[in-house]
Length: 243
Length: 243
DNA sequence: AAAAAAAATTGACGTGGATCAAATACAACT
DNA sequence: AGTTGTATTTGATCCACGTCAATTTTTTTT
Image (cartoon, rainbow over all chains, first blue to last red):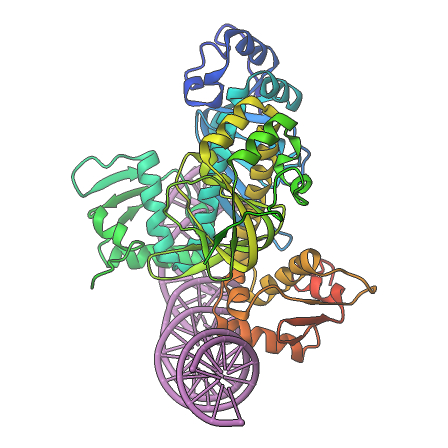
């Protein structure tokens, strides 16, 4: 279960390694002190849930380290993984800013340390520091752009093309395009979560992977992926116009 | 072509009927004066385009009256209609707030009068009036929630269910649920645009409509729709859990 | 009113991907 | 190592939907 962190190794907002990657980088020292006083820090293990779809907004969750997946489900049990959050990412701000409950749930995928800041604290920071609001505006506006991209992709591209796209996104986030043209890295997700991100079933995911291996576009072994030709992979979702 | 509006009947921000429905309702008189000086008002006819996907952001577009559709397309010519904007709605703010170019285009569907406010004016208003930023935060956060809903819907529901959902949305926006259980109203869209909103082809749209008529769920004649049983229509996308 | 153009419908057909069911591989305990 | 539970793969089948082509209907133009 999750535990409240305390003791000598206790984290705080001033020494937080990921603060400069988060929205809080615009806060003054005084504001940072407030944030530090109000934060609730917890360690989570895979399978735990930060918040559930439908819950009233309990604040924003600031990921210090680990991996969280944001999932949206419907009544019949279908669901999609909308995105992944790492150290430096914040979750739950959409609900807070919209003045709603959560419309997705956040599930822990890898052992994580996460701070929660309650709604009133965030609101008072927003009111006293306009720069924070602008930061959030930018984040939300960018997310909206990405979400709209995804709407188009999901309705026009094949499962294979969407998965190729996902691989490139994951490569840029969790691997690195070292050697010219090829790359190898560790996927942060199990098969069924890959399927969930692409918006398909594990069965179709499995078959898609198999076919891509046969075509030599990618090689999978467990969570390890080898991409021999990144250009070719990109062509899967960005086809040539002049054929 | 679009024309610059002037003369005695010239509109202005103070007398604008739709201002209190827009973000600008939080502006002071001074700020409203600035807005009024800087606005560029134009009349548009169907088929014209306010801005294209890929264009650098030229500001926000404030719809006074008419109907605008926001469309996103890819290289192969696929496209989806993301949403519709009426009098009181604002367009293009996402690009401005994200600091990007437009990632969708805005096409005029019915004769419209639209004001454009250039980026620097909006930015200075945002800087001097924090309430405006909060308004935008709320709008963008709500849109993001809706977009994420759509991602889930598009990947899990059938064309027919999505269309049933669209009909209810359009009814609430362009018709009214007068008589208990039934309703009749005028669709603001042609068939191919309905298809585009649902994320399907005109052919499939046509067949879906036909089947719904056979099932007695809806009756179409041109753009006129009769919905004899709204509850039944809702069941198409919100199925019973206890069967 | 006739002609031309555009929009919508219908038909025929193929297939990507969902579904159901079973087999295999893998991981975690004891 | 053996057992049990879970994740992944494979197989077989089906159908919702996209695609292409041909009409028909509606709208626009002259």
